[in-house]
Length: 67
Image (cartoon, rainbow, N blue to C red; front, side, top):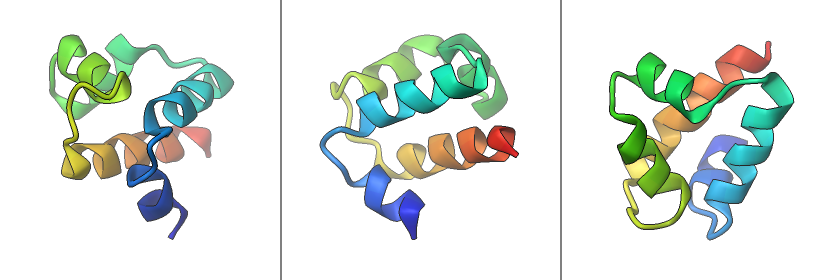
């Protein structure tokens, strides 16, 4: 359930950026793994786009790479 809580958080971008730093992944790599543009990821992480479905996918990819 942690994914759902963070995906709906107002601090979503901050939390994901911290996790990306923890695992040494850049936004460009995340975008590539998701099959979307880097600018799309940037807009989501900066709060310019809501994209709740994409938020869940972002967290799923990040958490998969934390293992």
